[in-house]
Image 1 (spheres, rainbow, N blue to C red):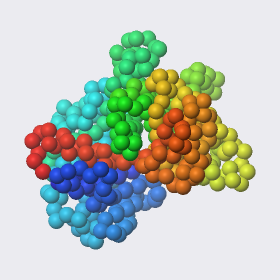
Image 2 (cartoon, rainbow, N blue to C red):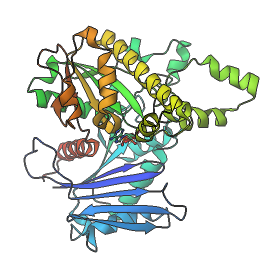
Image 3 (cartoon, rainbow, N blue to C red):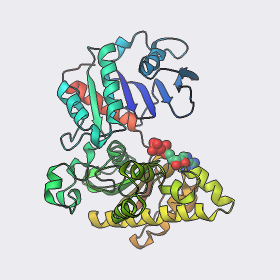
Image 4 (cartoon, helix red, strand yellow):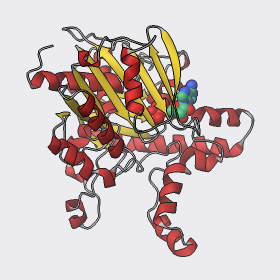
Length: 406
Ligand code: ADP
């Protein structure tokens, strides 16, 4: 069967196509076709990069309204063509950032689901409108094809109340002010992959997954279920990130409003876009740029990483307490998968758990493997997160649940 995965954001759109047979392979296969449309690199429009048939093609895209049509055309036309017709697509899976308190698993998209995604726009203003746009365009082009929403919040629906409810007036909780958590597709995929790599039942493991990309979050997973996470009502809470501050004293905001006259829009911009690694270093939110600055002696960049590691270790400690122990620590996403220095410095602070990193393995570009020493009481894994693959599997299972027979 052919599955199209759409992962739409405010400034980019990632898509891929998987072709699956009867059985699901143990290791995620390469997609048949991949496309990345980026609106941030050029002033004139978007740059679309398409990979398929062992080649890579770049296309300029001018109009936003018809951009998805241009993306989809590359599946059936030109050198990147992999299908005769878009009608060969059996199901479409969408990553949807916010499913609110209602959706605790992937679901086939109906008008009711679309309404729910629209109602949640105030909670995910940068993402949910883009998801809806993608869903509507596919509905027009492929009206017969089922579409499935796979929510980034769903995996966290199991978090128990003491971790979910904020110590605020209870009526705020009733208004929907609660810990939703994000990056759920990645955390769930990495937990399952961890059990597969270790050849141990997922239910037997206490796992902390560290998703360290531009956005960063941890999830505490016991018996295969998420019991705590660092992101909260929004993706701003928790760890220090590329450009987001993570948890800070909320009184700072009140002080800056009262004493410096900052308004909600300015605070929103500063906390989400001008804080974190970028804010402290004054250089960039990109860890590679920070590493280069440190190498040339920049002390502010050094401080930014020191704060990043300090907060990461503290948050891991907090989730160890939530889990009442730890069997496996998992690193994933851009920083987690690639930065041996971040892994080394983080693990150095966790020796009290009996965790010992194999420093040689850590430096040898590990992928989907255990990098702890044989005697370590906690296993440490680097897992390549494969959110699109996870979305395609969820879409496949929903497709089958409604009687699809491919
Ligand atoms: P997103 O959250 O947007 O999906 P990614 O998971 O791609 O982000 O992670 C982006 C981050 O990963 C950036 O900070 C980037 O600098 C960092 N990164 C990528 N490769 C490396 C590397 N080799 N060393 C250190 N950091 C890296």
